[in-house]
Picture 1: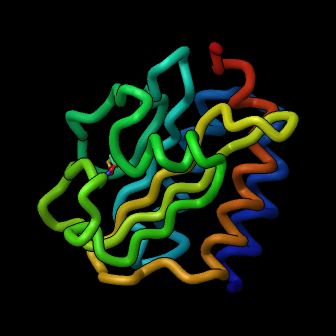
Picture 2 (picture 1 turned 60 degrees about the vertical axis):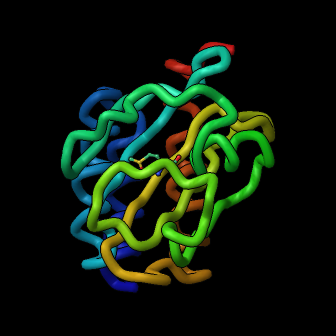
Picture 3 (picture 1 turned 90 degrees about the vertical axis):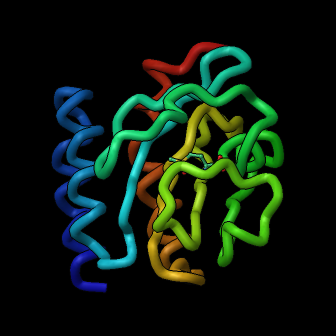
Amino acid sequence: MERKSGFIRELKSLVNGDRNMLFDFVCRDLMKVSDSYNWVGIYVLNGKKLVLDTFAGERTEHDVIALGDGLCSMAIVTNAIVNEPDVKENSKYLACFPSTRSELVVPIRHSGKPIGELDLDSDTPSAFTKEDEEFLTQVADIISVRVSEVFRD
Ligand code: SME
């Protein structure tokens, strides 16, 4: 909880600065907020594709995802959070890392429309709680104006 409120405070102080630094901060420092956050990425919608803008953790082959594929697309198409406690049980899941057990995808909205998302992978099963969902929704809302600068419809 303390780490989450500290993160939000720092995020607010950086939100109007350099965009690359801001997105790097979001990914790298979210990894420090919880031991269960083992990969963090910001995907941005570009036409019918989701493009990985910034990430922390291992490199993934899924740096471009066609809209329709994976849990990442599901969050955009439904404009809702996808919180999958067991990725191996979800046939829609696109595997990135063998160690991943659960995943949380939080839409980033601008004027109510999804323009991108925060994607978190965890090596822990059922890692993501309602509190994580609320915290990451707050993060998504704070950065949404900056994400809208790279979004292409
Ligand atoms: N697992 C995602 C793909 C992205 S990786 O997690 C980095 C999905 O099912 O869409």
